[in-house]
Image 1 (cartoon, rainbow, N blue to C red):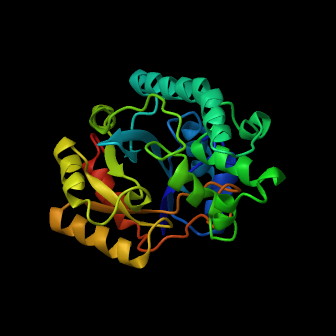
Image 2: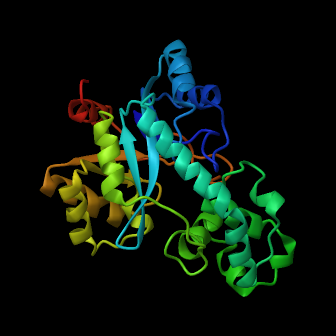
Amino acid sequence: MVDLHIHTAASADGEYSPKEIIQLAKANQLQAIAITDHDAVSNVEEAIYWGIHCGIEVIPGCEFSTIYKEKWLHVLGYFIDYNDPDIAHWCETIKKGRMENVDAQIARLREAGFYLDKEKVLEDSPQPMPICYSRAIFLDDRNNHNPLVNQYRFQENHMLRFCTDWIVTGRPYNAPQYIPVVQDVIRLIVQSGGVPILAHPAATLSISDNSLLRDLLGFGLMGIEAFTTWHTKEQEDHYFQFCRKNEIVATCGSDFHGKNKPNIRIGQVRNNRYEVVELLKGLSRGK
């Protein structure tokens, strides 16, 4: 079994060290995992080191933030050259943009009527992901009587749902910041020898957005994360059939983070056979 979408503490919304991730993978009897931090590759080498010691294959990866036709998208890059200076520069640019946007994003949410403290937003990282703002809102007792917040409070993964509905790029309470276009992200991944895969498309797309997906294939996308904790069974089937019809790879990943997604565990994904790793290796340059 494999899990091809895992975050370490190098992600602004991740929790665990590379060693702890490998230990969790071992405990869940996984053969291979991919380290896919948000716009960061700083923990890949350490994860590979511990993977060798524990008998877990570690695929170097990254989850890149991007946008296309005003849609917020994430593209996973597998088997990238994590020492590539272009990758490092790219990640640093995105990190800087997040840090510079903190005050504007907090101000936008306060204008919308939410209470949140900057210290809580920055509790885990100086370059917070959107879910960090959502978490700060839900942990602030002053929002207990906010009807919009309370609509989500008892839903599964409520902080994540609130975040994707209201805070991420293109949503009503987002403070815009620089996000690269998807064409450039795909080009960067391919140039570094990697395989570009669209992560959890149903997070921001509907199953009627097949024409947009075909645009991405024209830019060089090689697969879709069909099996993920983000998707319903109907969505999984839809994206799996899309992959089959278009002869691209259907991948699988839990999108494990830790406390920010407390109901998700490593390896919690269907159709996670090792064969998908072999398909990705066949697509990557020089593997």
